[in-house]
Amino acid sequence: MNVVIALRGITRTFTGPPLVTALRGVDLAVRRGEYLAVMGPSGAGKSTLMNILGLLDRPTTGVYELDGTDVAALGEAERSAVRGRRIGFVFQHFHLLPHRSALENVMLAQLYHRRALGERVGRCRRALEDVGLGHRLNALPTTLSGGERQRVAIARAVVNEPSLLLCDEPTGNLDSGTAQAVLGLLEELHAAGQTIVVITHDPKVAARARRTVVLRDGLLATGTAEAA
Image 1 (cartoon, rainbow, N blue to C red):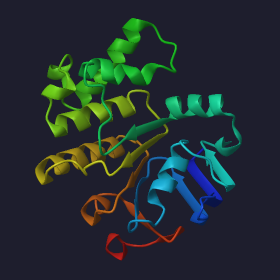
Image 2: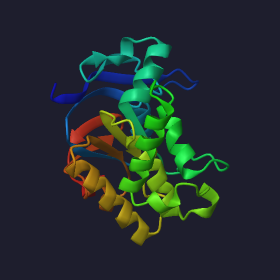
Image 3: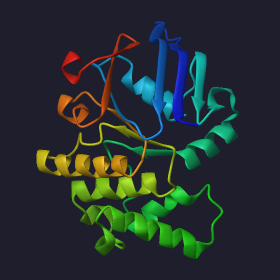
Image 4: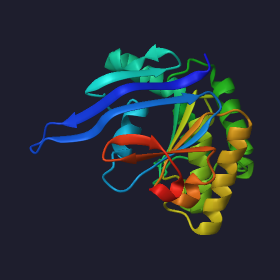
């Protein structure tokens, strides 16, 4: 299966009041190993699309296939399991537990995997080492820089070797130098074969991807970062 994401005729309507149609028939295919940026102005439907891609919301109509499975038709328990095993999330605000160490935060991603404790710890250690934080395993998020916290979040997102790494404004809370380092890390993951979709309003972030699509008024088109 070479296609990780296949969206066909995806719509999302919120009943309100008032009635709001956030997505209006989105078609999108993302092949395995692609690095895609989704751009668009505020209110274009980017967050709605991200929530559907991440199985955090359901489309009103249309088909969403992830690794060939129609995930829009699954029950909530099945969707949660697929989300935990096949999708890694990187958010703007990190979402780390402040009173848990870096290692413990990464281990939270192992909840849907029945592995022995030693194997889980080993995987999480390696994930943190791979993002350059092997020396910060026991550090609390409150003692880490913004860039280090985002690296922990990335380690947590990729530790299960997901089909899809979904990033929502991953550099939004970082200074320019740290942002470049995080984007460099995403490029390393892509070079290693990871499928990445980045939702962003920043042309500089989108420029690091290999393909860009632009979302406007709930409609998706190919384009350049500047078009957003």
